[in-house]
Image (tube, rainbow, N blue to C red; front, side, top):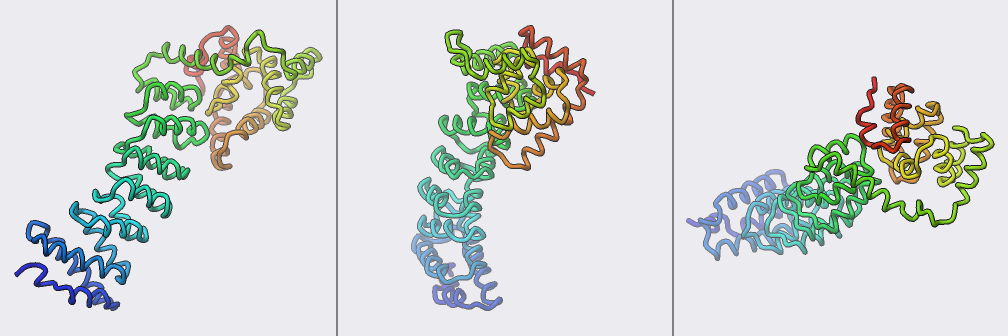
Length: 374
């Protein structure tokens, strides 16, 4: 006796309309039994009839029943696409197995779910065993950090060069993107080099250990990129900026103090702060820019410790310099705590040694790496 002879349509429809606990359990067991027979024992006519019955009954079936149907169809590559689409757009409890496992869904189906359904639906798609470049692009376009981080952590997801370049730029302000990006096997070395400019010291070390580039190559590249980025600023032909003129006047009169540095930042005078900080520390403009804008803040802590800027003023400078970087208060508090702990561990003598090296135009990164802290 065939499967469909044993489980006819009227019987299934009756179970689907039975809202009792016993009825729901019987329907779920019957559906499971149907699917456990597998396609090899069903004729094409029987398979078509079975899917037709499922089509009609899931409209009225309770969620518990739809979940059973979804879990079973998620494993079948012969399931009707329109039925799978319908389940994929159901509540996440129903849609999850379909979104994570079904091979029947096309990219267009997945992208429609991404655009029309919930964050939970997007997360489910981000962990699929196979995610195309088009689907990855749609997930990134949602702008949800958790979705994007999950996608980046999925080594089976394909991400286009343009999308990855966008994410590398976004990682400047979204710390949680940084490590998943750097751990991707498909990261373009060119983008890894770019990230070296601003990721934290620990992640810089990860690039060194995994990029196949030598320390000299990376440091040379950093200097080259930094010089290119500030070429317009450092050109000898450019007019002298007002902030530089004012900083020179204040320095000559002995008015450049840690308190004034904090005040300039609190009033949004970043250019004046950098001009005064350059004179206060004796460091080059390109290096001051790197100190102020690097993600970790270790270099800024070293410079401040070396020139006698106390912990309270350093804490204010660090916090104010991060105000321009989008991020939560929680992230700022975490970063502040870490860099203040670093500041406490540095001796003033050690910091002075590093700054003297920087003043002689010796490698910035090597000096931080070789710094011994308690």
